[in-house]
Amino acid sequence: MGGAMGRHRRREGETAAHKPLLQIQDVSIFYGKAQAVEDVSLTVHEGEFVSIVGINGAGKTSLFNAISGLVPYRGQITWDGRLRGRETGAQIARDGIVQCPESRELFGAMSVAENLYLAAQHLSPGEATSRHDWLYELFPILKARGRQEARTLSGGEQQMLAIARSLMMKPRLLILDEPTLGLAPVILSQLSEAMTLLKENADITVLLGEQNVTFALPHADRIYLIEHGRITWEGTPARFAAEAGTGYL
Ligand code: ATP
View 1 (cartoon, protein in one colour):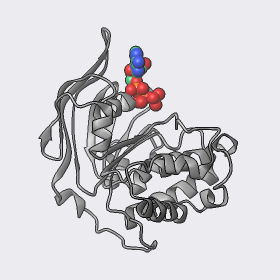
View 2 (tube, rainbow, N blue to C red; view 1 turned 60 degrees about the vertical axis):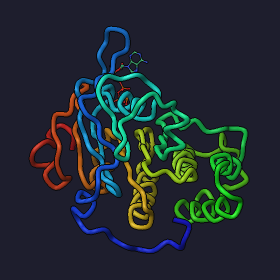
View 3 (cartoon, rainbow, N blue to C red; view 1 turned 45 degrees about the vertical axis):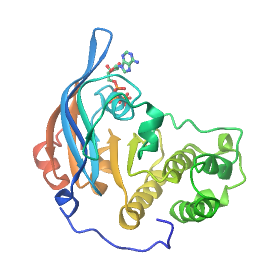
């Protein structure tokens, strides 16, 4: 990351052979007596794009919040070979897990560039500048809007800024929680192109939560289907339509 954009298509199945980066084992999440996630196990390998597909309320955000240290859970989460203990959300983020929330959480009165540089606090000035330029290549529309206040951007532009800001932190694992929520089809195709470039250019692992299967499938190396807090299917995008797609496609 930081170099010029190019096309380096990864080979199918290549990343599944890499070492596990994130391992979730029998994770359950409760809000009081209500159970949102039940005995979920999944693995994300270094360099993989993994999509968790599920409708509203299936448990995607709860699971992501547990991974990011924002909600308590039962079970085990292993990150980069180390079993998670009592790390805070801030420690987990510094350790390389960065979540882009579905609510975006931008600073509306600050410009696009200011929002990006806020996420570069731990980078050297030179590194921050080259990364900032690289992100403007990934999302050209943000370059045109660099000095504009974030609150004045369209929904799609705000989503791109939220993703770019997460990428500014140089995550090892980027968690994208429903990036397509409420976006128009034309914006979806721009976002999709950015995902393709990211996959081809960046040394990054992505965990995407989506109810929009049309968006989730093309970018994924593997898919998990989550229903009522449980993983009910796991496989390749190619198998999804035949085995699990009814009602989702
Ligand atoms: P969405 O796309 O709507 O966010 P989701 O798949 O991300 O859906 P979650 O937001 O994780 O699903 O919700 C899973 C279940 O947990 C739902 O039944 C939801 O009502 C419940 N839930 C989520 N957050 C809380 C909370 N803070 N307190 C109580 N219940 C919650």
